[in-house]
Length: 117
Length: 115
Image (tube, rainbow over all chains, first blue to last red):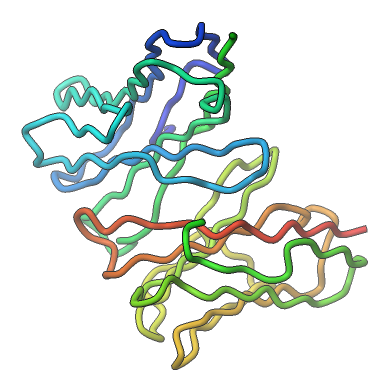
């Protein structure tokens, strides 16, 4: 079974609008972390935002926020006021903290976001 | 710039050869992680070192090996290379052991092409 599922292979958004990128996860661990990374066409992986499984508030970092719904096992990334520079591949990742492979990030397949002017 | 450096940026080699990829973590980070990104497998965790000790192993082939040195830089050795080993290899580093908000910051990657 997929541990991280990103169901949107591609998304389009108009500049200055908000967009939500979906991510669902599967784990039996009580303690885990959820991350979002951005990969522009240049190839580097840029950390955007982190949410811990015990965090009661949704994480926010500037224009990025994470809509964390623990019961539904979803961790959607919301980008507000999209900019042309937001066009990139976005990866959701999970780190399970209950076993021996701590540190390991498991990634989804990614969503390509295209921002139109 | 994440502060993680990787060399070389690009590597082109032939099947059967051996290569070494090098990673220097961010200043102060004790953990180093290696990941492989390919079109068919996506991003896959290979191995995690913390302060010189191996902490976790993922889908790392027996032909691949890694180590972290006393100065905390790390090397990933790939031997008996096959066409399928062509991929983007990322190194990431984090301050701690990989719990809680211990964020992994990625280097620019080494693109390996096996001909």
